[in-house]
Length: 386
Image (cartoon, rainbow, N blue to C red; front, top):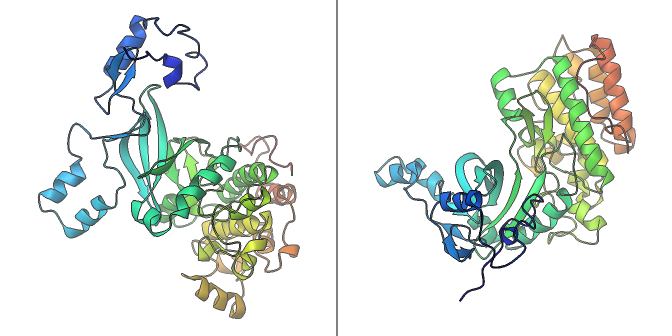
């Protein structure tokens, strides 16, 4: 007879359930039996001596073919087929204890799903590396795990929290809090540019989250509108904090580099600091301050500081071009905001704000000039610590 498993073995991190069944042979109460019976069929594993649908890091086939796959099979456009083939796992599948409900976004390295934790019945976001990326660079999977461990240490309202990470022979993914809202990049595409008051509020929220990360030795290295979520309550939250494609410097502080060379260049050229291009192994939190400045610049005037699409183009622009002040690009931008952002974008990092506390103070000065009430929502109480 196979050994029966306790519910606490299946959900070890939920305190109210831990210890509910002290004896191996103790049968589940009615509520637990109903919860387990309600789970969809998947790879078999035994819980309380009966087959259930929670398999360790396994992928089950969905009961019905995902609409995107079905449309491709019916001869839809070649582009639709290509997009469907890029999914690491089809929508509707169950991965471990998570059901993949919807694709939220795609990037060059990964796909982000909205998913449901089947035992807790709570929504989560799952970022899963594309199989082609892992095949081309197996170190990416190790990086994802290592940097997710660092990111999980950052617990702040303005940072989307990493809850879990998994790596199997075929899949590598992280599990994050699901935030009801939209990426700042989508807001920017819709509104083109934002009011100065809102730019300052977003800047303060980002300072709070990045400062919390920096205190724990984590450098983001890819701050940009698409890595900032605007929640339903209007607050800004940093995502992808110190994950595989950034945060190498933070890993080095702990004696690890996540598998990338020390001089690896990661990030987005339009928001990348000069030192990030010239000496990527020496960046610190001031590179994030520059990238945040480039983001605020884009929000305030609707255009990026530079238009480089590659590191080579950015090197050329940094050598030959200068930053046009916000006040010269947009007439209704306050002089104070223009000055603060210009300092954030200083080519010499020694001339930028040296701490997040200093930057927060500058942004509060801008708020005062704009006449924003002190009772308006601001960043959390620890946002100015360094």
